Image (cartoon, rainbow, N blue to C red; front, side, top):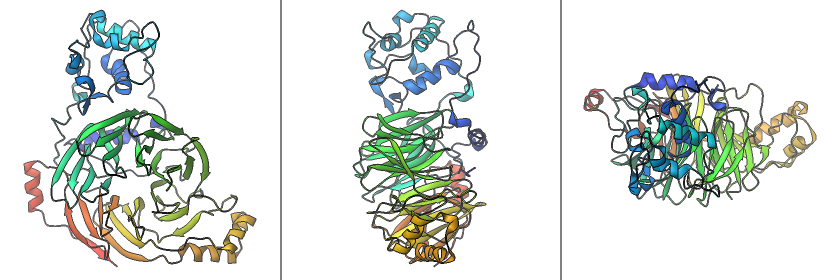
Length: 529
């Protein structure tokens, strides 16, 4: 099972860890939560029976970060309120006077006002809401489950959270950092916090700027409860789209080259894509056999390449939603724990992948030879193994450099490689792929394949850190790599020699913790060229 970095937001690290442990149990998140028996004569439970309905169908548009119609459904007191309509949404004991029921109940033609642009709620769901209102609309939410975090009440941190994702804006002015319940927008050099984008998701897995930099896509969710894709308007610092997805955290969001679609992975083994402007789902494909952890579009935006815990790199056609091919070889035992990260080589239909075996590898997306048993015919480069697992791989915008970040036992490394090489597969190797299964390769075949896949591979720099590296990204000019991980610090590395030129904590800490950090000696890092 692939080791996952933890995010601990507020002071309650132990609580977050407990939730994390629940998420990691087998296929717990692959299916909807098991239904518990409910006494039909007992009062309707808001927390156990209604909240999941509102969460899946309503809260994407009615939350503090996106209160459509001035109405919020994530706060119980506001759920009973009026919004811009001036009509009370819920009048305890009086279903016929409750505007919410009028909005969700189909008319004679079967049409409803809410949910907007979605199918109506099921008749039994509407009946359950009606009964709850008639019974007095009681709130039975446990005190420790009340949502207390929004833009007006942002997270507070006693220590830096684990950082799972970073991304530079295309113009090089901003750096997005994944936090707890929020994305923090910093000036690109880390000199100032520009904005805090606080949403519903406790856990933020991936942050990605759109190709034009106008929007920021976020994949995350409420572990073991709900996944969510957020689209933020960067200039306005406003949430444009929020789409609840499935029953667990969403992963690996990526943009199509034209900025119209975002793709992402889910723990229910599916790769999905939606319209960025509307949140409309346009693709759902289930060829993976375990959690899908990262995605990227090909250079034309016609295919999605996805990686996951099933040790595979898969190719999906966007227009038909059809699984096309396994891009990488699935060798038993070689990738135990799976693949965690995928990045497109700029200007090429080739993808860099990294995962549990610690070996960054570059694959051709489209096959040149007929698939044979056990072959790895799309592999065009493999790089020296890193210690531990590779959590993040990335390319510079000009494709001249690539990098990988790894983690093992609380320590990590960033390796920077030359990214320019000839990846045309030699004719003799193509003939071997076409004529034989992998077990029939001769010694000469194996030697030729090894020589080709390691040719021109050059380590530019390697920097070892006293912290596991879970994410890294190149600045648009290719001169800097921002890297972060389990100690909650963002480090800027010079891409010429890998030296750490600056580091900072991206979240505001309590006064006491700031003083402790100021008094603590700087942690030494080692680098080697």
